[in-house]
Length: 377
Image (cartoon, rainbow, N blue to C red; front, side, top):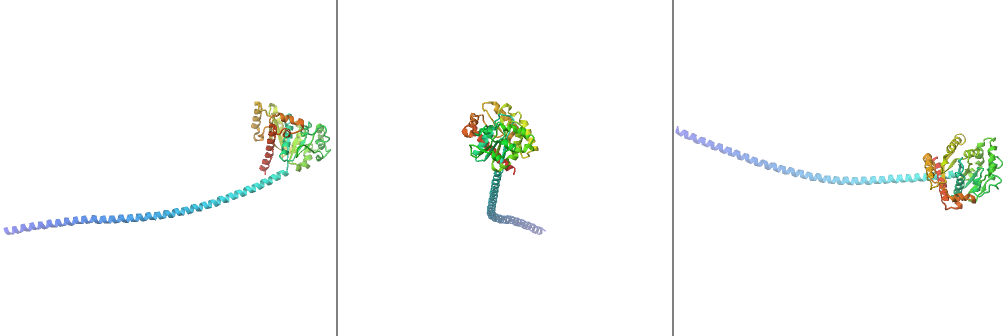
């Protein structure tokens, strides 16, 4: 019994040792496995990182190559676009140049055509002393000096325009009066002046009788238009100086003219009666001459020393706007003296303020006609 107990004791002890060995062995195995597993995982992670890095560098390289190719393509596209744009711009420039050339040819043609069709301008204002005859004389003389062929037709019985260009109105045998009552052809009445390119059909006091004689004539308002028709193509400008009244003679001038130019004195009473003149022009336009238009208003006898002159100019410009010529004719002693010598002021004293003003004003009149002709085509 005792022996068996001893044997069993040793058996139990041995079993415990074996169990302990197994436990220790299992722990070692587990520790080994636990040690081996991180190493494998670490190797895998390192390999994975290397793979990713390698792929990343390859991707970056690929991107660099793609970027270089993209930049190259973009540069080629930009160059192609610039080339196309240059060609388009060149084409547009060529078209513009061609258009301007065609426009230039058209303008030249229009100007040539305009020269073949002269302008007939009547100077009218029923108020006396506004510088109407002075303007007719100096504008016509300035036109001639600028190379135009001009004829002045004086239909004012006072005949100031006739004497203003050096012709003695008391010694004239035949005048526009003879043409008005059908006693003479207008070509027989034309006289040369002392200015190259300027001609005149004179007047005298006998013309006052035409008003009475025209009353019983058929189409009496059309007399002057019929008279000047044969000479229209011979002159660049036909200037008609009207009497200071809304008479049959003034109506004749408005019917014969293409344009009416209205001188206005820079004084208080200058605007009196202007409304009646404008209504008369409108009536003529509506009933007798549909082509008639007001070419403009010219301010005369301007005195810079007085406020009144400036106020009158401002009032006229406020009312008529662009129809008022920019050039203002000043009150000038030399302008007043010139008619007594039978000379336009541009010959009497070409350097005085009045002469310079009339030259500038005449250029405006000529340019206005060119713009109007261009605008209307």
